[in-house]
Length: 138
Image (cartoon, rainbow, N blue to C red; front, side, top):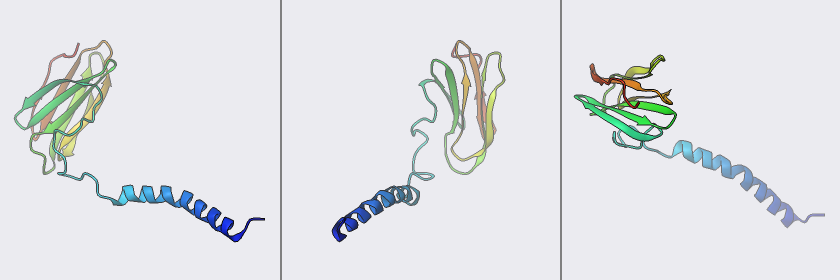
């Protein structure tokens, strides 16, 4: 028959097993993380793969990434700040384009398409000014 000290230890262990994950989850929700303006436009990429091209235009840049099977594109504003119209589009040859557009403060995208043995063409714009490529990454 367990003694009072054994019961107390067992109760503390059970409490620790239940509370530890809850406290960890609460800390992730409550503690401040990187907020708007905390990072720069040169922060870690949201696309997988190696950087393939960066095309600079007046109000931002179009960044293209490539893995063996996929291509990914992001349009990044030169001056993050107020929300403004932004768009990014990536089209593999012989398929429909993947488009992400709207009002964003820092970047539009990422858009990813399957591009194994295919060329792609990309467009990007920030506040009405932008760029487009021909068939690239062949």
